[in-house]
Image 1 (cartoon, rainbow over the protein chains, first blue to last red):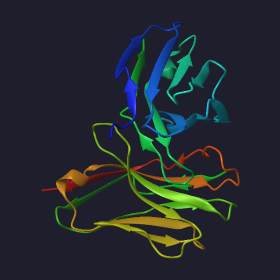
Image 2 (cartoon, each protein chain N blue to C red; image 1 turned 90 degrees about the horizontal axis):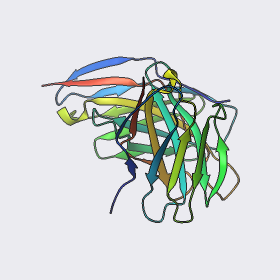
Image 3 (spheres, rainbow over the protein chains, first blue to last red; image 1 turned 60 degrees about the vertical axis):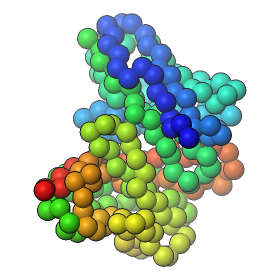
Image 4 (cartoon, rainbow over the protein chains, first blue to last red; image 1 turned 180 degrees about the vertical axis):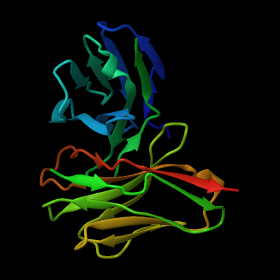
Length: 112
Length: 119
């Protein structure tokens, strides 16, 4: 079966712009989470969605937002990009609690 | 808040040997899950093994096994008969077991151990 699909794989944006990243979870998975990975901060939790509702949010500024659609696909948006937003953004989906997340290959965002 | 510590930033081992990666965590929760994830250069995080805290039996998945010591809050990963394809970053992760039936709690990751298998 298809895994977690993230698009695009690479993105270059200019400081001040906004960006939208997309994630299609494994069919049947209703829980989708987003993580930011940087060399300095490691892997940090952004937010988690379940059945179109944000259930959990990490410690990120309001410039970071997300949503989930009725088909469980999710998007995250970053407005007013800063250089420090350059990172690998990972999406993960899960079938049920504690089963472990299946991750996508990520979107590498570079802000210049 | 939970913390996960991986004290070995880098390790290397000869192919076919056994290697153990360390992980300790700090939590006041009594029910939780622990995971080991592998991230090869392809960037995709791959679930290697999971452990439920209430289960005393250590989890095993083929060549991968864990040594779970709940009282010591230790969760080490042993890779037997290591292969070149095991070369990757390995992350230990913690998730608390929420009473809710909906959604998931967040994963708290350690800083990772870069493992290199030498031919």
